[in-house]
Image (cartoon, rainbow, N blue to C red; front, side, top):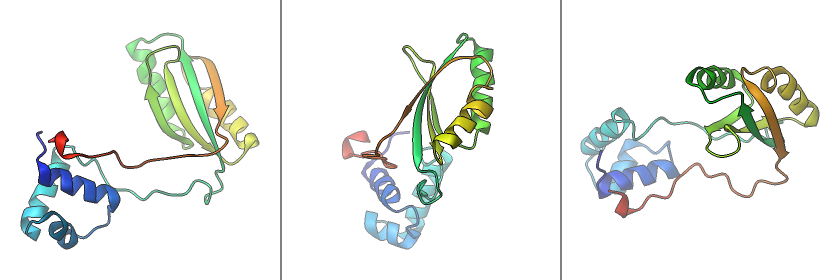
Length: 157
């Protein structure tokens, strides 16, 4: 889908405030409310806008530790990848999971309360996932940036 400058303006505004009313969004991008609503419906139905969510504080929810975990599987066969991905989706502490090129097959970002909680996650979840042969964990000392918005520019359209 080709995005024009108004689509980009809508997306930029939504990234900054996902709770913006249609009336305020329409005013911000220079459309009528009905035209803005139609544009937004198209952006949602074509998968440009995947959804809306609240960004919660892991620290406020007592998850004060972030672990970056590199995982190697026994092979990158379609079934191995599918089995692992199904299992990782069930682990509630996994914040993100990416299939990678390079030395490791996956990189996970995990929220834990503390080292003891991470040990529990490691034993009960990570080590039990199918086809895992190697787990390498690093612990974040401090979060510098955690963006929820991607830079949007008029050149994207």
